[in-house]
Structures are given as structure tokens and as C-alpha cells.
Length: 616
Image 1 (cartoon, rainbow, N blue to C red):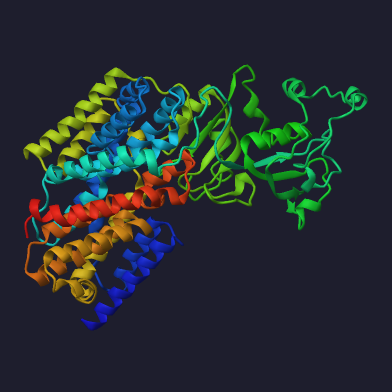
Image 2 (cartoon, rainbow, N blue to C red):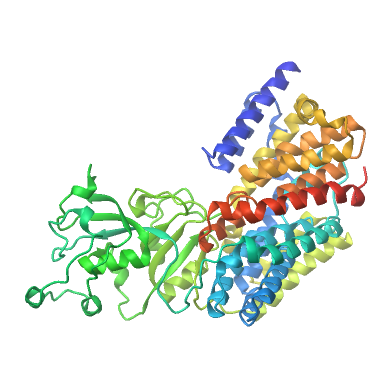
């Protein structure tokens, strides 16, 4: 037993290290953990694979499909359009947060946010409101709305599954609701007051402008007729004198873009554009700033879109026109749009070139934005991450194809998908039926969810391929891979060891203090690693702590579920935070300023209220 204990603790320590450092993707870490437990003999093959047949894993996969039914039909679109009609800022914030909190109790919160995010951006621009005052509250409301029901977040289902695996009674569909509603009410009141004082006012976006917030990595090409030829690359952003009329008269080029020629007006002021590198014939320059430019050179630049565009016009540079056939539809109007990489996107971890992004969607990627990071590779060679924003040049039909991809979110004020009333009503009816059957006890939640998925496909609300695409397989693999770790911790005594040596220091003060420590531990872990991974690590410890105190484990399990579902203090603590981090142009400190107090409020509330609703 001693050998098994230390081996299990070693696997646990390795998992924590990899989850925190993110040297590998979380789903890869989960599979590595599963393989380690199996090879070391800490679990049997049946136990190692039990996560794939777990109710939590299957229900989470089914809920992704049910959420997609609402999203693809446009069922949530009418709610978003209603938001745009609200002119008052405080009423807009209240209705927005209340709606997404309600929806997140039954629909995956990242899917709900993906629908609401572009609508809120468009509504704030149309109503002359600063989006930065609304996007963090939107993310937070999506999180604490999910704690109200068993299906509101994958973490709730995971904690429930772990409890059932240990022979304990599971939670009912609405068992979290009485406590969750209080958390939602307090969260709404706090955000309504704090958003005015603790969130930055980053200005009002103009809905009809071509401006794009944030600093982009942009690649430009030096054409044969550019006045930048023979200039040091570092001088491009410096002030220049207007060209002489005589020189201008001889500068005739039949291939020039007439619009650029008419708008070309060199400005004498400096431009705030950072030169990253000069690429020449596949190589890079050791001293980019001193490199005299030649025709065909590629410039990697970092700056705000308006500034880079001014530099491009000043020196008559071009965007790379790879794959000329993408311009085959020359009669179609070309639009600029910002496209965010959403959770579960197949683009994550891959480059634009690898995924043939431009060819697939018939768009050109002109820029790439990653908050608080200066990228130094060519745009098409950067492995994409959650929250990255691509600046694309596309036709309206191409944008529609991007909107249909659940792994992407088209930002900005653009015409959104129309509501398919038949599919919207059927999708809503199916979801309500699933909730109703589970709440009434007619079917287990997993059976009701599977039946709902079948109904969506049979009723043609979703095509089978769309149902498969809707599932975030990374979350499924994460859940299936880490569940056996809980089994190993229980069997080897690792959970008891951690409970005695870490939590045990506080057990002498009673179950309330122990519950408070467990909530705080889960909350801290969730800010630095996956919420589901944090829950799997802490649940066995929480159960062991309850057993050592001789009390019911249910209050401790509730503490883990609530703490792991609400991470407010960092933009990387929860996927919804990462999505609004880039879209809102926030700084890391903005989340700490408004999120840390809310985390502390919820911690104190959990300590006081959980024992009242779930007695020891």
C-alpha cells in the first residue's frame, strides 16, 4: 500500500504541474494521467476506461449537442435583438446579465456567451455605450448562472459522478437551485454597483467604422513600385515629407488600386508601429531595423490597425495575395471582420497554414491579435490559442460560413443569422422536455439527455455531422481521462494522506472551517488550471476530510462544485473570461480588480450558507 500511495501521489503531483504550467494541452495531460495509472497498475483496465462510460462524460457530451440545437437555430437570437433595443446602460447591464445567467443554467455557458458576445458588442456600439463596461459582467453572469442546476456546468456533473462512484447519493437536477439563486442575486447586485467604478471605460466603438481594437500582428509585402524600396526598414514609421508633384506625375502604374491612389496622403507624423522582422526569401534579418528594403520583402509589424494601415498607404505596401483564386468572386463586396477563436475550436494549437483556413472559408487573414503578447512569427505560422482574434478580409457569404462554425465567433456589428422559427421552437421544446423528464424523475438525466440528442437529429434540427461537431471532445477526453485519478486516490489512500496533511491542519476547528478551506483551495486551483481538473483533484480530498470528521460529505462536494464553476480573478481562470479578455481590450489587472472581491464574497457566502442548505 505504501508503494501505491507514493506512486499515486507522484502521478497527482505530475498532473498538477502539467495542468498549471500548460506545457501540454489539458486533454493530453488527462490521457497521460490515465496511461500512467494503467501502466503502474494503480487501476485496472476496466477502471481506467470507466471515465468514458461515466454518466458525467456522456451527459456533458449530450448537453453540448442540446446547446448546439438552440445556437444553430437562432433560438437565442431574439433575446439578443431585444437587448439592442434597451438604451439605458444600467437596464441593459441588468437584463443582459439576468438573461445569460438564466440561460447558462440549462445551456453550456461558453456556447451561450459565443452567441451573446457579438450581439452585446453590436448593441453597445449602436447605443453609444462602452463595451468594456459590460463584457466582464457578461462572462461572470454566465459562470454563476451555471451553478443553479446540475446540468448548468460540466463541473457540477463531474462532482455528481464522482460522488456516485464512491457509493454516495447524487444530486437532483435542481438541488443546487436554492443556494445558486442567492449567489446569482448577490453577484448581480455586486456587478451592477462595481462595474461603474472598477471597470475601465475604453471608449465607444463606432459601428460603421473600420476601426479594430487592440494591436495586431500584420504581415505586409513590399511591391516593386513601393517608395519604401532602399529605405531602412526601421525608418518606415518615421515622419516623411510629402512627395513632389513632379515625382508624383511620373508615378503611373496600371495595376494600382485606384481607391488607394485617391486616398494616398502621406502624413508627416510618426506612426506607432513596431517592426518585428523583415523576411527575405524565407529567411529573417539579424538586424531588421537596418535592413534596406527590396521588392518582395515581407514586413512583420505589430500595432493598432489604423496605424498599420496608415503606414501601408504611406509606403504603398500590399497585403500578401496568396491563392489568387480567392478573389474569383470579384463582384462581391469585401468586408473586414474580427473572428475570435472559441473554446473547442479545431484551430487551437494549429496554424492558419496547417488548417488551410483561407482556402476552407475563402477569406484572407490580414492580422492576428493575442492580448498582452507580441508575436514574432509570420501570421500563418503562429499556433492559434483560445481568445486569439483574426482580422479577415472576406465576402458576406464567407462570413456566414464563419458564423456557422461553432469554433469561431464573428465579432463586430454584422447581420447575424436569421431565426429559423421551426427549428428554434423544436430545439427549445426538446431542451425543456429533457429538463422536465429529469426533474420529474421519469428518466435519469443521462437518459433524458441522450433521448434529446436523438430527437434533435430526427426532427432535423441538427444534422448528424453538426451534432458530432458540436461536442467539445477536449472536455470529454479531459473528464474521461482524469476520473480514474479519483479512483486511484481513493484506493491507495492518497486522498486520506492529503486530507490529513493539508486539510487536517484545520479540521480541529470543525467542519465549517474545513469546508471554507476546501472552497478556498478549489477556487485558487481553478484560477490556475482547468476547472474540471481542479474538481477531480479536490473531490477525493473533500470526501476523505468529511469521513475523518465523521460528517456528511455533501456540503464539501457542493463547495467544490461552486468554487470550480466560478473563477473571476484572472482572464485564464475560465473559458468565458478568456473570450471577453480579448474582445473587450482588458488588461490582466482589470479582472483582479473586479473579480477578486467577488471571489472573496462568494467564499464567505459559501462558508455561511452551504451548511444551512446542506447540513453536515
